[in-house]
Image (cartoon, rainbow, N blue to C red; front, top):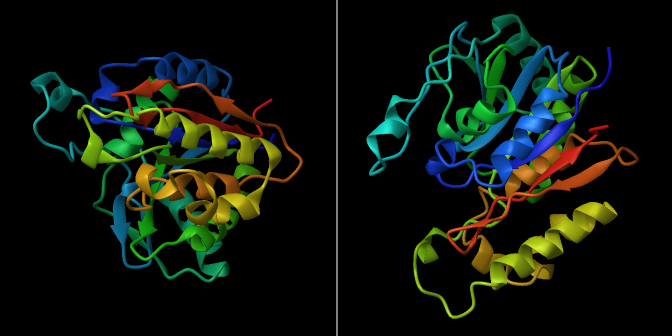
Length: 259
């Protein structure tokens, strides 16, 4: 069985589900090349727990965990099926790596998971499992979580860290004198990813320009480090163009191990 890739996907605003922009078609193209997946394992900052939890239900509810958006957004469904047996495999991987882990048989998929999956696998024909982010996760822990999930790729499982390359919601829809700061930050991160500079990415808050402004809190950046941790040093890595939405939300994403 060929090794599945790992991805970091910027899921942006929930409106991404209705407005594909630049990234949506690019995710569709990537998804069309992934025809032999055994499962999709996705980590989203919209499910944070004490320790790590794994969805274990055979059918996964589409969670609309947002408010104040147009009615058509709440009508969308992503009818994913789960895989309880695979949940047990993931649990074993995480416990072996030292994570406190349990299976949650009631949890569904939040919008950080199902929104990008609507583009990657619109037919919902691959089992999906969501893995939570520990509420105290930091950069080092995110890399370690990705490393713990890496063996799943050799079993044909696509590993996705779903977050946002920039995520300052305080500036959302505001008139800014210098919105270009978000692109400066995004380009710095893309260069570090291209060079495989894990040390720079691990210390991005001290080294990257505008890092704290681009991410006042870390939870939407850490999925990139999870996807990076699940990658291998010498495999292909590339930026997936996503454009800049609302002036400051970069939708750029990254693929690791994609032929």
